[in-house]
Length: 360
Image (tube, rainbow, N blue to C red):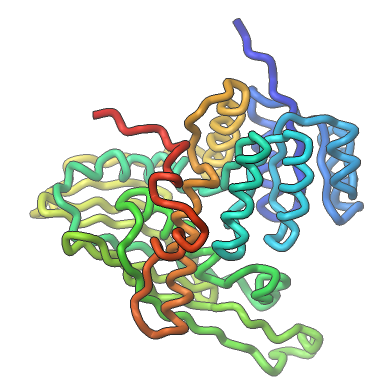
């Protein structure tokens, strides 16, 4: 028996929102009923192309199209409005990362979703990539892990827009690019006991060209280096920057029995001597990860599943880790992500409430 399509709407159709929008169109489990963007012209073009109603006002979108779930990719400062509107109407929310600009906002979003009885998922797309998922599945094959290594390097360019404003973005390279490798490490190794981190900000004062003379000075970080410490001597490192190309992203695990190296193209398992034991290539389109996460959330909403991937609660672990890194940068000493969680009344067990238990 075929399952009825889930009516969904999209809020924020520029940038990554446009990619998610196309994933919604391709997903057989959903039916796109409308979209909205603060840029009315952008919304109108997208709506006309897809043959769905378009709006520049989120309230009108929700009231007139009545979706059961909303996918949103708005700048972080605008997320509060979207989550409140959806929570008031009992509409489930998938949100582009980060969960929140800080741990207080992130925890507030989770509590609001729980109070409204809606699902809240965050777009940590790496978990849906075949190669990174394979690394997670193979993690026990390398024995006791003593070292994790991850990096994400990217040249964003000179026009940072809201990304350059801490009040709007919450953070810079660490919050945006670093969110993904830190999420992979937390997903694989758990919440670290302590973190130590350094960040730098270029703080461009003078324009580089006449065309940039009106570009504002920004106060978010360009580069970050992080050390994560775990019980039993396990450690991990994360390096991220938005100021250096070409794009480079990788995730590594080193254990007593071997190692795992994963990126967007492949995942390789080796024994302690470096001999290849398993090699999985990502043969699908890179955009397929967006399709998979849309499908996963749609299925969770349609079936009212208790467990679903990348919940807001689970993302509290990632936000707490990042916030502890920023705190460490200020205090110049190791800081505890768990203390960040406890400050908002959450435990690790609370954060894992909607994560599928691992079968023994």
